[in-house]
Image 1: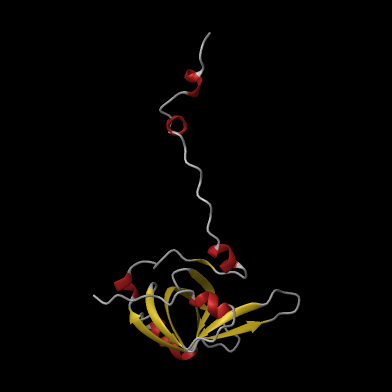
Image 2: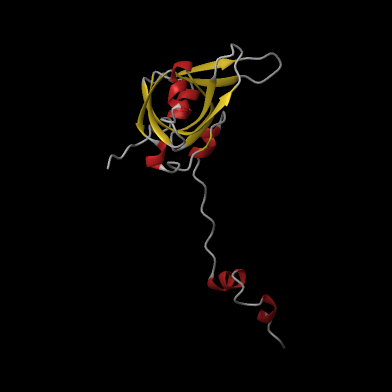
Amino acid sequence: MLKLQLTANAVKDLMEGKQLTAVILQILSTKKVGSVTGAERYQALISDGTYSYGYAMLATQLNGLVTSRQLEDYSIVRVNNPIVKTINKQGKEEKRTVVLRDLEILKRGLEVGRRVGDPVKWTPGASKAASKPQAPAPPLDALSALKILGFIDPQCLYESD
């Protein structure tokens, strides 16, 4: 069985402007979106296993992969030379779009059958929040744990004179 590993932090690196020549990503879903030119366009939700990003657009020459159902939800793909375009609309926040022009399906979604990793939605600054380790909760003593679990009624713990 062929085991494929997603390119670690590829989504974060792309969004931070790094030029990547080839990345292995998972396509979590695709959907047909409207187009100014009238041609069919497909938007994809991509993941690197750590981060996901919903503004990825397939180049129109790749539409056949979606319509023929070769490119399915959960497919693992190699994307060669991904491009990130920044769109500025007056009075609105800038939006980044990952353009997928050269894509090779490494493993079909039906074979994978699930999301790889536990990706969180990438937003500016998300990498800082995701990389901060959280302090573990302090350990509970046995009595507190039993109270929380409902094995001991807290009212019964008071000493009588």
